[in-house]
Image (tube, rainbow, N blue to C red; front, side):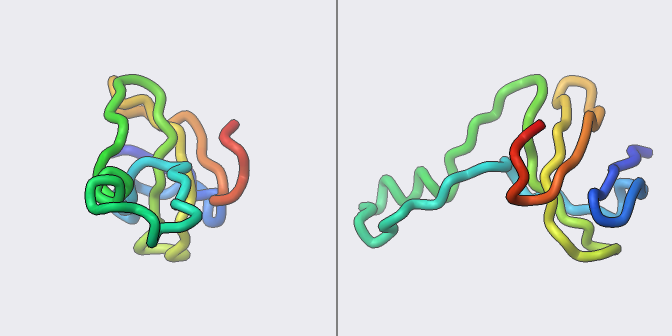
Length: 89
């Protein structure tokens, strides 16, 4: 079982968490100016690179807060976590 370090609650088992997608996605300043293709790209297109990634997670069965975590997708190991709004370490 993986242990994930919630920056608010500390280390907990992975079953308490829910994956929330890629971290640090900038929202459009004027979403009304986007056509259908641009909006679809913003909503669904994400990089799917191997290696270290910044991801968004939610501590569903704990504090309920979202946070960001660094995870290596090739080994499934977590290498740190930080609060939303903080810069990536």
